[in-house]
Length: 374
Image (cartoon, rainbow, N blue to C red; front, side, top):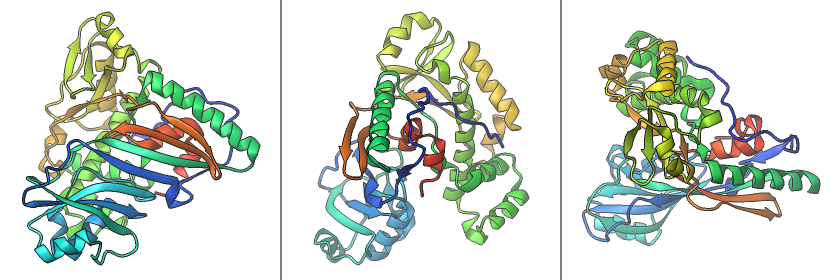
């Protein structure tokens, strides 16, 4: 298992408060999904715009499925949202009974205190993973006393200005890896085909029987291992994250296309404008490698991992094909920083698949982010 420190893009400031509260109250962390497209209003699939509070997306799907007399596996979502905090996102189910549809529209479904339906509409298809344009965050950081709060605001303004100019390192956040990196460890065992060792480690972590063999959960573990290796590659590129290298495979943020960059100087103006960014590896048998210095980084990370590209194609690993992911992402609009009675309020938006915790750690450091409840 690769365990490395993740370098910061922005220089650390001595003025950063030593004690910052992150996610101390659910309202301190509000996430709203930005849809890739709007539901049409007609079709056999019901779309539920829900608000959940200190509840995982999996548990929200389970509660809604139970109320609608459906299986959780039949539900759809564009992605997983943070458990700790207040989050709003779309969930979908098909062929819901008319009386239950009316109950959902009227806010009369029995969903408990942590989940409520804000809106119901229809569409022709199920919502699938990846069908989100991004997420908007409103986050309160708490510091004790006027001086600490003023220092915190100054640091937030400095860091967010730099991230808006250079882009946000596209690290996978700590929530991807589970407690003590266990998700990535389980994923590595699956990629290596060590099923007995996987079963033993899963049981030690509290997963037994059918739950440990759940295909979606196993896929999550393998994705966590891919994420760990991506982070390792990104960590080696951080000092020049906003500069293209000869041989890079550039990621076009507008549509996700990837193309080769034989001569970096020709494309650097587009990189400086955050239209394109260098990309990194999500390893798999069909991964397209770059050339030059970035290829050397990626092949070194793979060699150090103790697995091969072909290992990711195992049935136990979910036959991961491999893909490219941008090494940085733009903030989708200009960030806002405001003083609030509780501390400092931040507002910013990120593309789907990127992590607000990566932005927060640039401001408050690893200790405050890792200490925040998930």
